[in-house]
Amino acid sequence: MATPEEDEVLRYFDNIKPRKEDKGAFWIGVGFLLLALCVPAYQALLWLQSGYWTALPISYGVHFLGWRVPLTSWAGAQKIIDWLFDLPLWSIPAFMAFGCFSAWKETT
Image 1: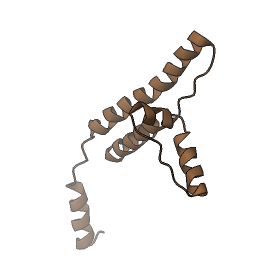
Image 2: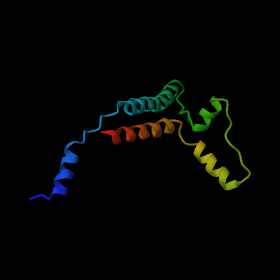
Image 3: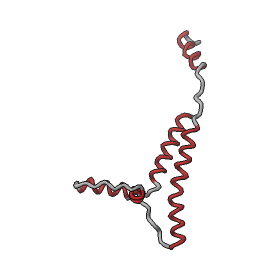
Image 4: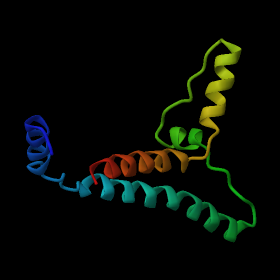
């Protein structure tokens, strides 16, 4: 037999409505995923035309926007910066898609 306190807790949980699923984060994640897939598709198109694989690092995207890769006089910090900017360009929208899908999954 349940105590009055337990009955009150059970009534409270009976009145809780389930969360509504937020589809916005899902569709933004789908958009980022499609954008992430466009980069290797473009690289494949260039490969089919020339026979050479064209690397597209993040630094290429930064230069395309008219920005510069940061420079520092610290050798170790510069190695880290160079490594980060040498990652594939598709990794940025892929990580954004992962974040959006994670946020969407929290609401289901």
